[in-house]
Length: 216
Image (cartoon, rainbow, N blue to C red):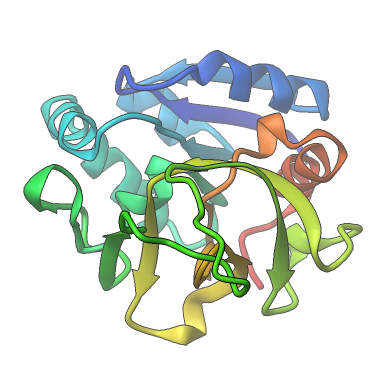
């Protein structure tokens, strides 16, 4: 099995940290690119992102990365991994920036944590949700292989994905509410956390992505 990975580049985020982590866990070749030919030839695709959703969506559309992503997903077998804002962009709409229409690949909304977020003890929680948190695995999936349930991953976000269907929720986090930490549908897996910053568990997930054939 070859492992040529294309990291879709629309100019938002430290994409080279993702690329370096993929190389570390065994990718044969990693291209950070928005070249349709390179992305089309890759064995698997990563769709990362950080920053404000309005800016991300503007660049995604300007560079036609939305079409590149949808083409990769329509392949049906090419594994696709979305990370952080890349995951949020998959949904229908985000509350960020007074409301932004997103890609609509996964029906649902991206919601703000709020200013008065509290834990079960009534203690106020800071927003953004930043730091290590447990992820409860909701389904059995190849990307969870050799990762214990409730392993800790690194999060940085003020908005959280709320898909309409519970069937696509692959993992959850608890931060004043139960939020979606991971989504899975066909050849797509998406995570709110940053696997490239999540030490052993994160690197294992990226390794699992390289081994995944795109089916559940």
